Image 1 (cartoon, rainbow, N blue to C red):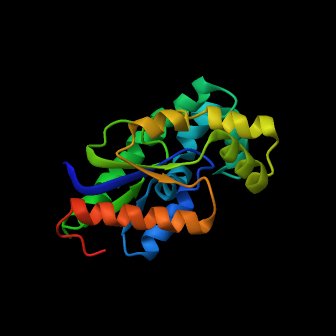
Image 2 (spheres, rainbow, N blue to C red):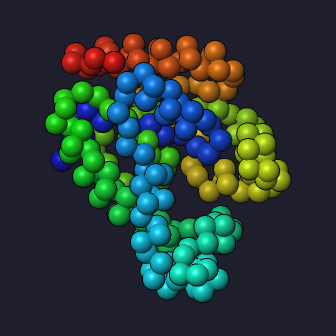
Length: 201
């Protein structure tokens, strides 16, 4: 199935994609959130996660997300093992939810943080939320209480934001304050109205 009315929203860790996602919902866009789906799916696969990463990531028959995070952000091969398990499951659920929203015949958002790191999505419009790496790092250090090294490790686990910026069909710049971001959102909505004649946003 082609995602005729789907608009992919992506970015990198610390660029403020969740803020943009929320603002777009407030302006009337329906949303499918890959992160939310991931959090719903992961606890259903304790057995598979234990088989891949050992007993240390399971406590009381539940996945210890912090312990799992420590493994996957320190080793690319371990990260790819988790991705191989999770991405097809997430994609299948996104497809199901998209089929429902496509029936409405109006643009909607699929929030996929690792869109460029994934494959299998046939979307015509990709929007990247941008902030330079020094802003990403600062936000992560403040928000997650990471050291500079820990923040950089999370950033390096993804394709660089400068590369994503080049690949984007539309860029929302979130490098500055809230007022600036609101003006970027308005530009995006104007752009969407121009692309979709049936857009009621």
